[in-house]
Length: 99
Length: 223
Image 1 (cartoon, rainbow over the protein chains, first blue to last red):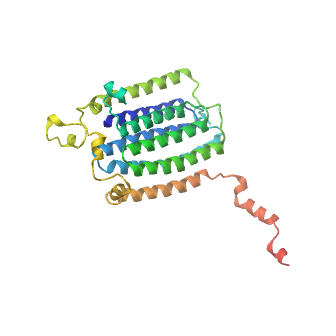
Image 2 (cartoon, one colour):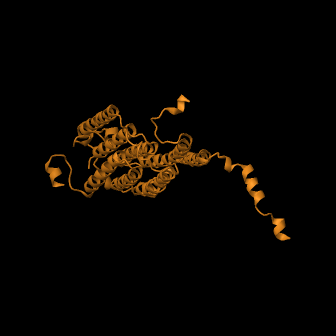
Image 3 (cartoon, rainbow over the protein chains, first blue to last red):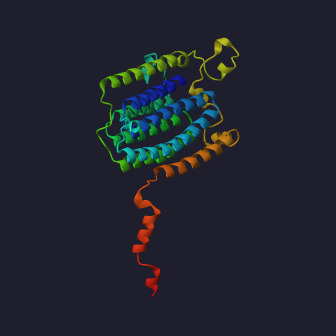
């Protein structure tokens, strides 16, 4: 199994996540698309760790998962705050700066 | 598998290939479902499928510990948080997809260009039989024999990829990064508690005193 197929899959997953960030307007779904992109990068790192046969790539995936957990906690708290403040999850409504 | 071999793609029917194709198709399909489904709860459940498929890919990459972490942290904790917030805020079907047609066309074109760039970058140098990657590429002994290490050859290594393999590096070379991540998690938890607290009038201290005054006091009950 050449390593490039993992890279291709990871690139496609990253593209799908980026597409989701561009076409969705719901803040929660936007956040889930960011998670998709993070996971795509994790696949790349794990495949590279397998290719170079060292533990460093896997350690990096571990740290990415830790940072993603922290990011989700803070981001969802921000989204809840934003919803109670503005009453909507639509991020295309530019009412925050207009007031 | 034989179709792929006869097609000249260069894949042989090893267990890892089967694992890669099954979980790769599952991950791509569920990722597309995440961004296409209009219901937010359905998208979140598709994201669970995607995360579990990526855990399967980690298994194929002989990273068993990462696979377990992926299921526990992503499939468990993070998805529970997502679903909790979705249920807390309510599902709204109206403001989900971008309805502007030109924006959507531009987004699809951009994603297609990015995918094409990634494919053309990787298909040439990394997937052919004479690709340049692996430990020999860093220190090439013979210029003519720089081959890509297949993952089957990587299986023959004696060192595993379990918790001991990962922990040995994590607690020696990356000790400071590990402790910094602990600090990061603590700060994130405190920050989330502060951010998500609603500053309503009925949650202030004065109202608590008002509620306490309406309750019967201890003295009257004792007498």
